[in-house]
Image 1 (tube, rainbow, N blue to C red):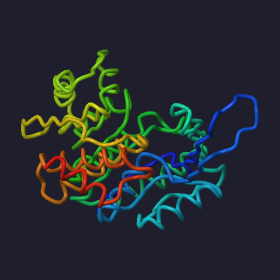
Image 2: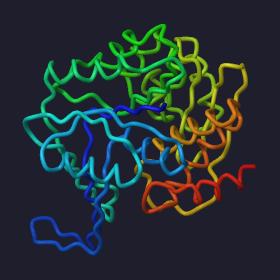
Image 3: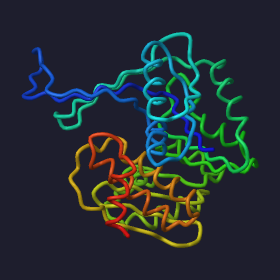
Image 4: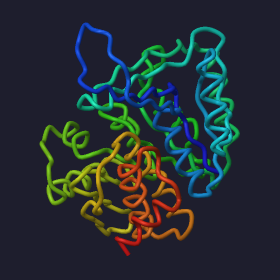
Length: 301
């Protein structure tokens, strides 16, 4: 079974406003409400690819209930923990104003809630896949991912981490199966500006030396790089297509990689599926469907 963890899911309210004027009443020209959060995005794309999975994390209030309703409608199994106080966040994304976003805080997650999550994770078994994705809310310990990985050490669980800076660096000693920084995040870790795939490769290898089994680096319009456990380096330019919505593209890449690996346990195929899924979501108003991913994959084959 595949599990994803999203500590701070959201309802994303995506709007377009023509001729936005600060300080005045503006009216939307288009609106879209979607469940959000990096782990949930991975779950939803996996569901689109026919991979059964369970979403773990925390929700609260009426927004939390709506998040659960929507992801279950999309075929994702929800095992999200309901918190008694607060509400799950609403993120406002002003699509037509250069990607401007206003993200909510979300509910406060207490020690009792964290214990419930750990008990659920204790139920994972050998051969299961766990994707830890996104940031840690301020109400939680900032070493939460490390604590989870330490707790699951030796159980034979394939763990994937999509996080930034110290949150990512601090889990490398637990040897995650896959980490997926983008080129900017990788550059921040090593104090370098990484623009090209060739520049990324040596630093992805450094991250592998620090403990990651495989390092997948997304690079938006520049493509992607995979430094794999088998010693191979895979790189690909971005497939051709019109950028429509970059939100969730990196998460879709993670989902595509997982689906590809589960199908063939082949790094080249998993990498191509990751690139196809990430690009297909970038070319779509919403997260990519199986058909959209297969269309882009055929460009890479």
